[in-house]
Length: 221
Image (cartoon, rainbow, N blue to C red):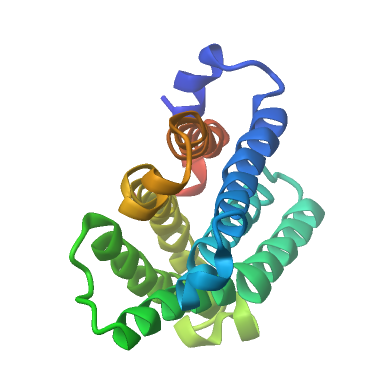
């Protein structure tokens, strides 16, 4: 039984679109409003971290959903193009720059790195993302030449897909820890905003992705 079959009775028909848009919007807008309305000029390089990471996660959500579900060759090709454009042109650069901003900021202030679960999971997800991009790109770019081309290269795509479905929740968990529990956010935002943006929204985004998951596309045996 697929994840979609389990979750389908629990969600309305409009869930994959309406709820995704609202949840992603609440998460994204809340993060930007909190950052931009709390004396942003005093934040130094930290200023860019929440803005870019929230942008990246929103783009990642779109990049995943644009591939779900696809059945016809023309639809698959269009979805893959949108997926690669979203990830390579916006998502990956944004999250990389956001991570660099916080690392550099800590270096400038001689602060220790990775002392919280937010920081540890954050760097873990970034390293994982590098491998994710390498496998995904290598399996389709230049005809999948990196992995032998043709059917050999296509075999790696299912691992890329499975990895993405594990990595995405890790990004959401990292965002939850930073938004709901970090000292800066808890002192610069209301409980209501944090619950909506960093508790409810990530759960809905994850459910929206899982409800559209087709395990038949990942035949490992």
